Structure formats: structure tokens, C-alpha cells
View 1 (tube, rainbow, N blue to C red):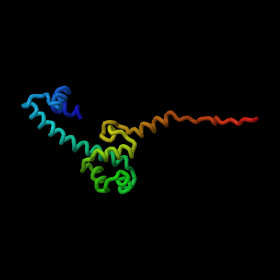
View 2: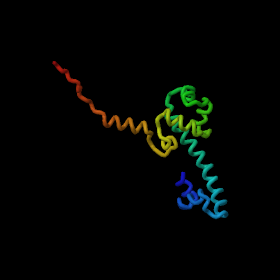
View 3: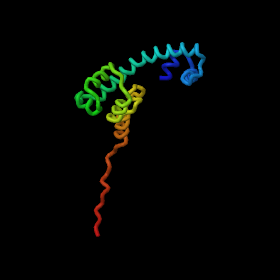
View 4: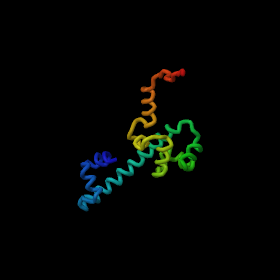
Length: 139
């Protein structure tokens, strides 16, 4: 998110940090504040769409009512999330991450593959047929 703000505003990361810490002059603060709000509103739409796409992908063919129940939310709320029409709260983010065993970065579109996909690929690459190592001992 920092990169979006600094790029859109044309400011350095340090200036953004100073702004967040209240170390920017008042006249600049008001202008930055308006610009940051505009960017945040624009970004919210994008993040809602990203989360919605991820949820659709992760749910696959699981019934909407089954998954919404597992995530402790209404089916309508889950549908709205999938369609990018609702904001997801922290408790639901945690439930989604735990249920699908993914990272927040993946859910928010900051990683191309999920942790689960990475683990599956790693297991497939490292799995080789193993010989039976049990031995028959005779006394």
C-alpha cells in the first residue's frame, strides 16, 4: 500500500512515514490527507475485487452456504465479498486465511500463488518412491 501512496503522490517513503507520524507541516498535511483519502478510496475498490476473485478461486465448487457457515458469516455476506461489493473485516480475514491455509499476502493479491499451492508443489517435487525399510528379524 505504501508503494501505491508514494507513487501516486510522487513523494518518498520517508515523507509518508513523517506524515503518518505527524511530522509534516499543517499546510502539507491537509493536501496529503486529501490525496491519501482519494487514493485509499480508489484502492479499496481494487482490493475488494482482488479478494473477491481469490475467494471465488478458493471456494471452487463448494456450496456457498457450506463455506459461509464454516467462515461464520451469512451467505449474502460471502456472496457480496466474492462479487467485490463488501469490505471484509479482520475477523473474517483471519477465518478465511485459517480455513484455506493461505497467507494474507495471497488473499490481498500480493503473492501469485498460495502457501498451499507452494507446499503442494514442494511435496510433489520432493516425493520419490521409498523402499520398504521394515526388516524381519529372527531370534
